[in-house]
Length: 187
Image (cartoon, rainbow, N blue to C red; front, side, top):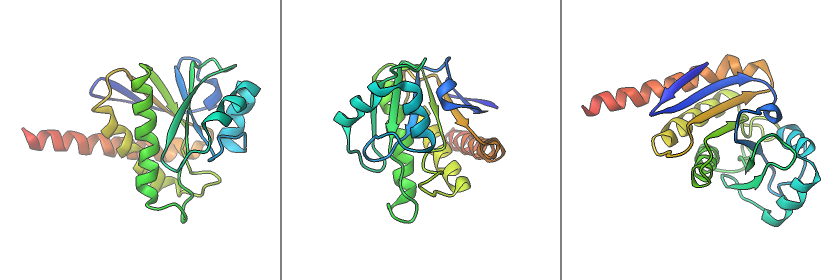
């Protein structure tokens, strides 16, 4: 599924975040210490190699909603942007912190003149954020951020499980429709 917003392609695919060879930067659903762990963080650290863990130690800790960047190490991607999502039910306001993950990651990518970024569904695994609620927050945040991007031209959401493809596209379509309605109302 692909949508276009202000020259930025938004896409949803099922796959492996560490195997997005046509994307310049992938996003890590990190823990506060930016350490290898389970899920997305574990897969990215395993694929990138030990140099990533060393680089991450110098940047840690980070706080919910914050993003930092490293090079891609052994990945085919030039960069890894690490975001700490909120632990659902603990880190509040959860929706604002989750939206900040996506907005900060895209702002960081734009600052580094990165043309393409791939996101996992941040905070929906061990951090317990309900998937549908996370899809809505992420979609609105990315669509809104797309209006300000100068260098990022492609944003991909990558889902390991089929659930992502069953849920996420409808929220992305809704967010784009709301943007178009708002633009139409302004004219």
